[in-house]
Amino acid sequence: MGGEMEPMVCPSCGVKMNHHAEKLVLPTGRADVVDPVLGGIIEEMHACPACGTGASRRREPR
Amino acid sequence: MDAARPLYIPVILGTVRRGRLSLPVARLMEAELSRRAGIETELIDITRVPMPIDDAGEAIKDPTFAAQMSRADALVIVSPEYNHAYSGLLKHVLDSCLKEYIHKAVGVVGVSAGPWGGTRGIQDLLPVMRELGLVMIFWDVNFSVVQNVFDASGALRDEAYLPRIDKFLKELVWMAKTLRHGREQIALE
Image 1: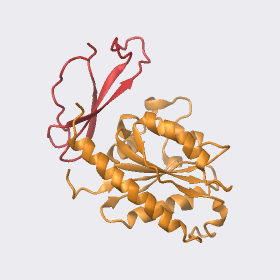
Image 2: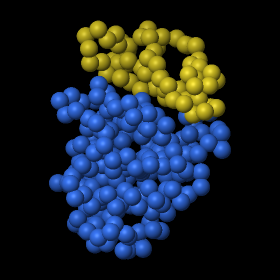
Image 3: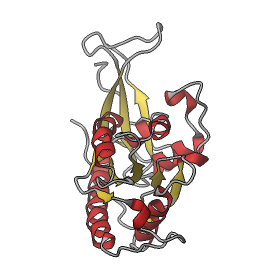
């Protein structure tokens, strides 16, 4: 993938979040840049160990 | 994990049909969840979730429903069986979110006017739940011949459902706690 990214920080309480899942999102637009091996875009799911807030971000394709 | 933080487990009433007999089922599930310590719940009636029908998917995400799904640790879906399947509008509402569901528990309560208690609709929901990232428990509750299960006021007439609901909720709460711990504490390697 695009290498290690910085940990996400909880938007609610500022604690470092836990990266617990990755979802392969299949592109729907011409402008979407996909991972050439996986054929889609990886969306990372993160959860806050302090308050439970969930957040996500898309990983840059390699 | 902050054990003092209550689990939030809303009940989704998955039909908009007028005269729906799934409403007393959903109210019963909400009441049974409310009786348990450490759990917060509410009834989410998909009739009240504003969804256009000239578009679909995450483009029509309702902010209130999305926030409820983000906050949820688990879901109870009350799903009547219509023509051997779940309701189309239930799928329409569920499809409006995705990342909000991932690694969260779900249990399905089937409802039917016939003898099978919505089992065919539950079976059809299984691959949908998996693709949404939800983790399905293996206990179901099946309300067969639902028109005979509640009286005209919506009160339960058949007490045999209560121990079945208890088994279902015990597994759902266990799964909700386990998955919350995993989401918040165990990193994907």
